[in-house]
Length: 273
Image (cartoon, rainbow, N blue to C red):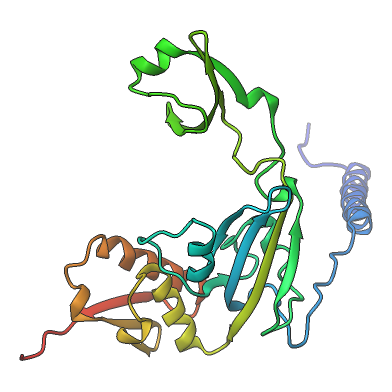
C-alpha cells in the first residue's frame, strides 16, 4: 500500500490548518480588543513630572499629633528635637516615581509647581501602613532579659531583628508593638522644589552628592567620553570610610539612569604639595 496521501486527505489537512490559523488570529484579536488602553500620562508645564530629577525641601508631620518625624531643614530639626549631627541637611535629590521618598508622597509629587511651597496629604495606607493588631504581642519578661533586652515603657528596641516599641511592663510580662510608630496615621508633607535638574552633568553630580554626603559634588571631576563616564575622586576622600561602597553605588545609579553609558571609571590624582 502506497504511503502517498490521497488528494482528498491533503485537502482536509490544509483546511484544518487554515481553521487553526484563523482561530488563533481571532483569539489574538479578541484579546487585543479586551485589553484596556493604557492611560496616557499627563505632562505638567512648569511643574514636576514623573522621571524628573529634582532637589526637594521637605518636612513630614503626623497629622494626629503634629509630631515632625523627618525634615531636610536643620533649623526645623533642632526646633522639633530630632536633630542629628550625623545627618547632612539641605534639599534632597529625588528622581520622581523611583522610590527616593515615601511611596505615597512620591506618587503625589507630579504636578507640584517649581519653587512654590505645597502641602501634600498622604493617607496611612500609603505612608507607614495601617495598624495591625496582630503586631502587638505579649512576651515574658524573662525571655527579653535572656536576650539582653531591658524593657522600659516607650523604649524602642530590636527584638530578633525586628524593631518594636514597649507599650507596657508588668506582672512578668511585656507588651511590645511591632507596628511602625507612625502606622495608622495620616501624614502631612510640606514640600518645595528648589531645583529642576535637566543638564546631564548636573544630574551626574547630584547622584554623586547623594552617596558622598558632606562632600561638594563639584569637587569631583566628571567627564563623558563616548560610552564611558570618568569621575575624578578628590584627594580629601581617598581614604574615606566606606568609599568603595559609595563609588559602586554611584556607578550603579549612573548606569541605571543613563542607558547611553556602558561604564563608569574612577581615577585619583595626587599633586605635588
